Image (tube, rainbow, N blue to C red; front, top):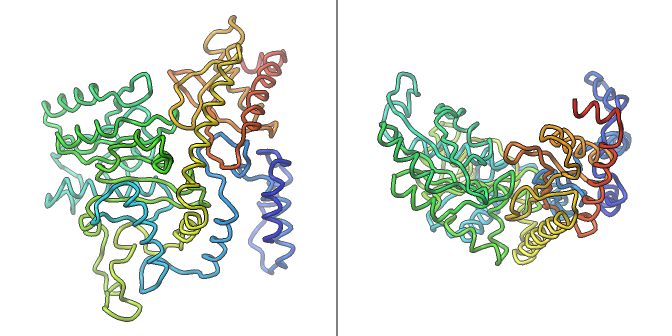
Amino acid sequence: MLDDMLDSLQQIRQRPVWQPADEAVRQLFLSGLPADGAELPDLHDEFMQNILPYAVGNRHPGFMGWVHGGSTPVGMLAEMLAAGLNANVGGRNQIPLEVERQVIGWMRKLFGFPAGASGVLTTGTSAATLIALITARNVALGEHPVASDGMMNSDIRLAAYASEEVHGCVGRALSMIGLGSGILRRISCNHRHQIDLMALQQQIDMDRASGVTPWLVVGSAGTVNTGAIDDLNGLAAIARSCGAWFHVDGAFGALAMLAPEITPRLQGIQSADSLAMDFHKWGQAPYDAGMVLMRDGEQHRRNFATADAYLQRETEGLAANSPWPCDYGIELSRGFRALKVWFTFKSFGSDRIGAMISHCCRLAQALAARVEMEAELEMMAEVSLNIVCFRYSGDQSLADAQYDSLNRAIIRHIQLSGTAAPSLTRIGGRAVIRAAVVNHRTRMQDIDRLIDATLDAAHTCHSEPTGVNREFN
């Protein structure tokens, strides 16, 4: 099994980036619960034939559709060890907790958080954001009855602020914690797709004048659409001036702190009250592995620790080694996800990971340069980190809506070809091709293949009469 997985990685360029499963394969997964067990070699054969070829494809160097890391054999082996250990890392007196604490300590120092800061590993930034906003809500409400009785009949009016490019997990978290996504003010962006600080301040002033309390300011360290980094120092200053909680969404961009040429652009992240980020993106750890860091560790713990009898702590024995990870998050049952992160950083080192991040950003600039060289393509946003947004615009006779349909068709054509895997997004209301360079395996040849595939797909989609009628009408 291990040999097969390693072989599949070695041969990854010989495989399509992605391919759809046909109906016969899908039908295999509609059978009922088996009464009798199957032999392990048979199950492995089924995996190799009917599961492995039809995954999303983010191991492949040509996968650029979404910000998914490519993982490494080191992380894969660490996952095997963690599964073999089968430790519940919610708590107890065990060394796996020390591994997680060490990873958190590394990140605390990397991001300049104080010694009293705390953290916990999560499934990803969405869960990390939820933990951060629960804490921020409870800190804001303090002893108010809403903290225990909910928001029913409450006269508290809070507002949250983020750019119009903010990730959807922020709005979802606001809904889940009972405040509602409607309190989120989506602030306009400047030409670099960063939050407009003047517009933010004006909205805060208007809210305060109408009796609304500015509660949360969210900064993005790498937006999902374009990779833009907000002015984090500026956001921190505004948050301080109005007494708001400052949260940074650093899902993939935060780890760019390891790349010396990018580090200055992330200044201000050390002022955050909370930071959410992932290791399964630029950290190249296997899914899933995220983390939340909180400036005030005691405040963090107070909002999640419980006094349940079966979780009572002792100074010796298995119930020692407090506080536990379950005191800082929403999970009591937790896998040993810190091990793959620990292995990755111990194996490759922060310098090498930083160099890989720099490499991805250089490839993004090279992709942008290729786009600029092609008369039929146009850039749609400034390249901030590793995300390139462009589109086909070679036929001046087409209307905007027709261009949108054509570019959507181009993306589908490329994906179905298995040559590359970009994705669709919208910039300025227009459909564009989005390529995110995240995989450590990606090279210039993959950039060239994406451009060639884009032009080929554009000519194919535009020249087929039936395709044109279907796409444009």
